[in-house]
Structures are given as C-alpha cells and as structure tokens.
Image 1 (cartoon, rainbow, N blue to C red):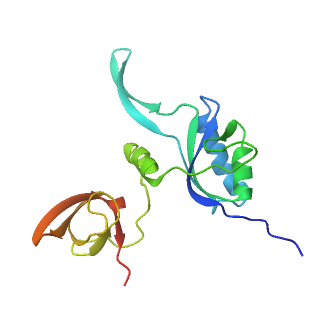
Image 2: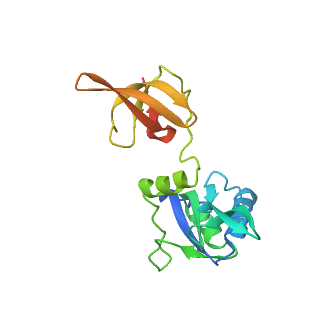
Image 3: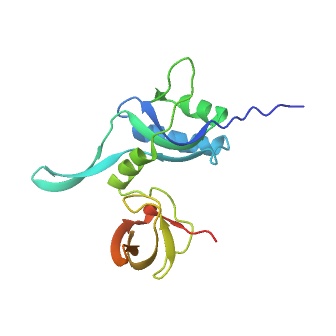
Length: 185
C-alpha cells in the first residue's frame, strides 16, 4: 500500500525570489509546470506586482509597466510538499521569502498585505461567487464596518454602496467588491 504524504501546511499568497529580470519567465514557467504536473489545484495564481508609469520616450508620452518589487513574484497556492517542491525547483527561482532555512516551509503573506498589493495593481483580490444586485443583503468583511449586514443600494463597476443602519440612521457606505460576503441562510 502506497502512503500519501500530501501534507497541507497552509493556503495563501507566498513571495518567491527570482533572479531580477526573470520575473515574467518564472511566471510562465510556474503556470506551465502547474499544468504539466497536475498541480493547477495547488498552484492557483501567479502575479508580478507592477504599476503603469506614464513617461516620455523620444518626445512621446508612453505607458510603461514597471515592476514594483524586482526579483520577486507572488504565488497563491496550497502549500503542500509537492507544490512547494515544484515551485522552488522552477528554473530562475532562488527561494521563498519567509522560509527560515533548513528546508522549512515559508509562511504566507497577511491578507491585508496581499489585498493592498493586488488592489494597487487593479487585480481581483478574491472571486465573488454569488449574485450581486441592488437590494441584496450582504455582510461586510473588511474595513471599519466589518461585521455589519446591509443591503446593496448601488453598484458601479467593482464599487458598491450599502446602507448601514448606525444609531438608528441609514448611513451610505462605499465599498469594494472584495469587502463583502454572501449571508448564508
């Protein structure tokens, strides 16, 4: 009988170190290896933190993608032995940030840290897997009104307006889509 040594340590976003200038190649290789080794359910997303900078090149204004953290790539993954092995043995990957040597597994980023980075990049922090519509009552999971339940009164792209009842007053609150969750019955 073969023993399954698939041990789940943690799920979250991890930072991997790469050779500077190889971030895009590492991203491509990681996604390719996730498919090749049937790890798409363990290696979920790979992001390179960038921002668009408007600069003048040869007298013309041009938008350029600039790497925010040269030499680093973000990976959302289920930290299993196999997934850890695949990622750290990807060409041009030099290691994980937060790994304390002696082959120890790294710790994931705090949710607030990854949200700030992804939102700054204009990326989706987490997928909303329920219908969002005016009148739907939802729970706020992030920000000053965390824990409150309120109906959605307006939807404008990824921004929502909810009406929170505070001290007997209806108070409009503007939130991002990732700051709410569905209320389970």
